[in-house]
Image 1: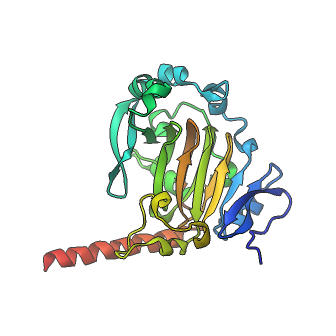
Image 2: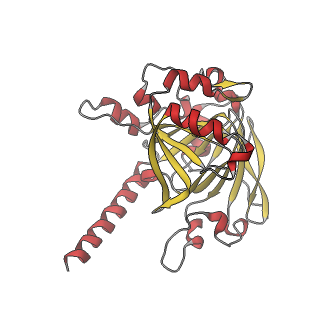
Image 3: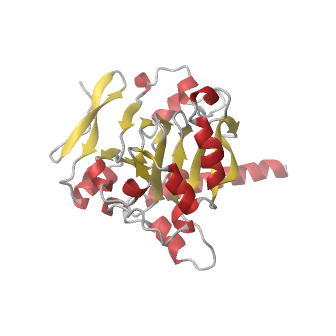
Length: 300
C-alpha cells in the first residue's frame, strides 16, 4: 500500500520518494487559508512546500535578483560593509562546518566572482554564507514580509521585546552551486521555514524517529548522509527539489540535509509557538539532563 500524505484541493503535489514507494510531497497553491495550513501541516507536524506565489511580492525577489541570478553588484553596493558568517563546506567542525567572518564585499568580490570562473573551482574552497542576521542588522530594509502562515512566532517576538540584548533567529543564506548544510534537526526542535529568493535546493528529510536507523555504534548521527553507505529511501527518506520562489515548511524534529543545486540565496526563520512548545520543552529538558550527567562524571 502506498504511503501518502492526504491531499485535498487547493493542494497539488510533487513526486518524492518515501522508502521504496512513490509518495507525494504536498505543494500548496494560492487558495489556502491559515486554518487549513494549521490543521493539515502545523498541528500534525508534517512538511509542505508553498509555490512561488507566497514570495511573489517580496522586494528581495525583485532587487536582489537580476536575469534570474543573484545580483552581486547590488548586494555589494548596499551591504558590502556588513560582517557575515561564512562556512567552509570542506571543513568539519564538530557536527557542523568551520566558520569565519568576512565583510560581505570581500566574500562576494574576492571569493564569489572568482569561484564563478570554471578554471578556478577545483582549486578553491566551497564557502557558504550562513546565518546572516540580516533583519537584526538592517531593520529598516523591508525586503520581505514573514508569510501569515509563520507569523505566530514566540521565539523572534521574545527577542524583539528585549532591550538588554539583540538577537533573533531570522537569517539570510547565500551559497554557490555545490554548497550544502550537514544532516541535522533545527535548533531547539523549532519549526523553520526557508524561502528561495533565487536558485534551487535539494532537501532530504527523515520523519522524527526514522533517523535512529542512521546512528552508528556510538549513537552518533552521520555528518553527511550522502556518505552514510545506507539505502536512504529504504529508511524512510523524503527527497524534494525546491525551485526559485518556493518556501519549505520544516516541522519540529524532522532531520534533514540540504544541497544548493545552483547559486542560491534564501531567507530562513526558526520559530516556536503553542503547537510545538511542548516538543521544544522536552528537547531542552533532555539536553539539560545530558549536561548534568556529564557534569557529574567530571566531578567523580
